[in-house]
Image (cartoon, rainbow, N blue to C red; front, top):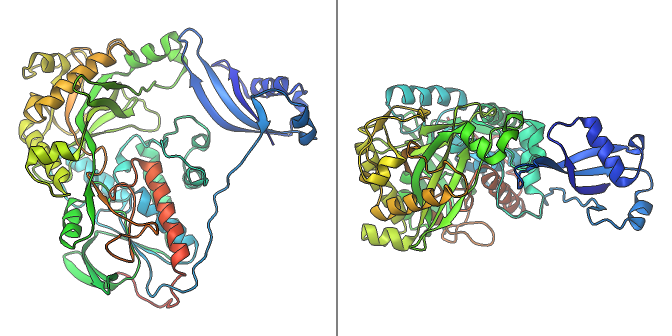
Length: 545
């Protein structure tokens, strides 16, 4: 096929207009075009007075080779494709069925593809199935009563289930894994547009059905998915995984295991401690901390699109600034038309995140505004050089956030933060928060240096989006789970350098930073296992009770 890039069309256009424009570029008649496939569609809003859609499309015509030989235009090329594929190089079977710990994107995709290849994997998840998890989370938001095992962080779909469902990623991919992830989502209920939209997202409402559909497909392929099942211990023999112990309904069960995929997520702190005590090699890594900021979505859309905002979906943004102290402050996980959510997973500690439905129909825009902290920062603060020090640092500020809000999400107007005083009233921006909230002073639950950087960053962002530093913009604290505070070190075979048969995977292990990158890492582990072991021969082996 022939690829045409930088194809410009007005905001209001039809399929027929797109076909006509493609034909014009190729100097053909519309009826000569055999097929048109949209590969990319984005909004070009660099000139606010002239906003349009930009397309990349692949086109089939007769005598393509001859046409390309004559072609002189740089925007018209031969379409190149990288199809995802995997190779089965192993020559000996596993002794036992592979066990995957964690039902977020990494664990879910690894399990799904192992099931497709006949491994009959066992996926365990400490939280609930998504349909029950939704009810548990909604109860928490209404009552404040937390289930530490099933919440916004733990349960089927992982933390991404209660998010905007963003699928764009900075990961470089030459193996076709990203497209494979998107196709798999579409096969299980995602809108087809995610295959070509520049900044694809699903939304929490769609994600909940998609992960359920993937689970049912895994079961149909002979896999098992066990909820309310928590990893408590890893047994080792000859420096390799030999079995694991799981807890289900307060009962312990030992399972033989020689292939263990650890896709535990960035909030599995008790498991981090267990691994550290078991001498598994862990390193501290940088992450970012800060707040959520809410603005009126219409204001953001007007600033980004001017009068064209009426014709477009709610606008997003991505902003960065280098502070005078050389720290980076940036926006993260922006949720157009979304909600701030109480995303706590431990009693007595409080953390926030952002969430949107697919339609992004909420009144407010929100995003994290965060500042990078390094191991040097938190080790100095905590006077501790343990690789788990970042986790202890997160816990410290989450405990203070809980106290500051008296168990509710602490919020403060930006103007009050500037003046260093506690907020006592709400302004024209009404908080859109899932969970109770309370007016407070966020300086009580964030380091002073971070507060100063947030003020400098938000003020700088106002020069890019007028109104960003609105004194009545609502800040919610604290945002601490931007990424995992640790990395479980693995070798070239994707196994832990400390223990054979243990595969650290996804965001919690320190190898991803979002839904798509976590799913891609799950595929990498799947591919590594295919090279290492064939499916187990013993088809009568029992799973979890």
